[in-house]
Each structure stands twice: as C-alpha cells, then as structure tokens.
Amino acid sequence: MTMRVALFATCLADQFFAEACADAVRLLRHLGVDVDFPERQTCCGQPAFNAGYKAEAARMAAHTLSVFEDAEYVVLPSGSCAGMIRSYYSEISDEGPALDLGKRTFELSQFLVHVLNVETLGRGLSGKTVAYHHGCHALRELGVDSEPIALLSGAGAQVVPWEADKECCGFGGLFSAKLPEVSAAMADRKLDTLPNVDFVTSGDGGCLLQLSGRSQRRRVGASGVTTPFRHIASALWEGVG
Image 1 (spheres, rainbow, N blue to C red):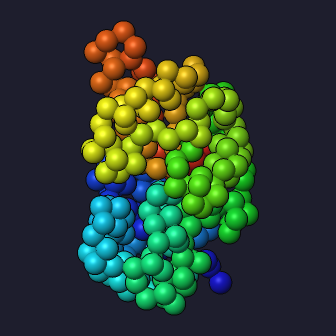
Image 2: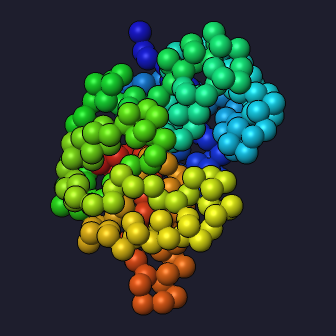
C-alpha cells in the first residue's frame, strides 16, 4: 500500500517559500509517497501561543487537529511549526488527539530519514558547497541534527563546517519584533562567521527570512553577504538530479 502524507505548508512557506512547498511535494512523490494538501489548513497557532494568547492558539490547534485527523503522516517544511504541534499542542488542546497527531507529524528531513529511510537522493548537488543553518526548534525540540546534513551530502553536496551553524539566527518570531537590535546582532554574528559557499540552506523559512533579510540590509555597507539562501526542500529536489 502506498504511504500517504498530508503536507502542512505553514504560513511562512505558503507566503514566502511557495516553490519550496511545491518542491517538497515533488520530492515526496518522487520517493513514491502519495501527497495530499488539505485546503482547510491554516496557521498552527504558534505566534498566538508565543504571545501568550493561549485561548486563540487553542482554537487554531483544535482546527488543525480536525484538518489532519485522518492523515497517515503530516509533513512540514518547517521545524518550528512541527515543534509546535509535537511539543505544545498537548498543553492547549485535547491531550489524546494532540499526542496522536504529534506522533504522526514530522519535519521534512526527519521524515525522509526516519520514516522513508532515505539518505541518498541523487547527485544533483555534486560540486556544490553548502552551509547549513540548524533552526532552534528543529534542533532543540525535535532533535533534528544529522538528518539534513546526511541528505545534502547524499545528494552530492559538500557541507562546509560553520562555527555558528547551531547558534540562533535571532528571528524567534515575536522576539525579532520586540528586540530588533538584539535580533540583528545575532544575525550579524552568524553572517560574520559564514564560510565561502555556493548557498546557505535551512529547514525553517523564518530563519531564512531573517538571515537573507539581514544580509540584504548589510549590503548597503561594506559588510554585505551575497551568498544565496535556499530552503532545504528546494535544495534536496535539485539534488535528485
């Protein structure tokens, strides 16, 4: 029987990384997975939850639980939103369904490695040097660490060591709006230590927006970074070759 996956696009991916969502679907279908896109999906509720609006977040969580109730697996191109479902839904919604959905929910690279048992995709990234940014939620809440590195390497890329690869980029959702100076300094620290690579990739759209946006802003001066930033879903689809 063909494995069935429901893609949870997430707000940022829907608005800023639509092609990465499409690439995630292409990649999963290439690997023999039947992918569905429930059109009733909305925000996972993380911004409201982080702002302290638990009642509003609970309503969004209840809606999400309903939308993905029958999904065999739920896959997200975001460690942040996957972490919200797995780590916090049981705090703000009916615990049983929340825990059940959490067990069926995976960040994209996590799903590829641990459910599909895939690490080698093709050689489409042969000759490319890549720096990988570990998003905080994927790394610290989901334990996603070696999976994206293995997949990028398995697609032919050389993943270059980066001393700040596991440091927070400074986005943190509302954090970047409430403490913009600190947020910018954290992004600058990462950009200042970025090795010379063909592109930077990550599994979280918020982190990519933070780093690429700060990079563009710095280009006004002499410290700009011109390295492209790409979502890992698109990088891995290219890696299929």
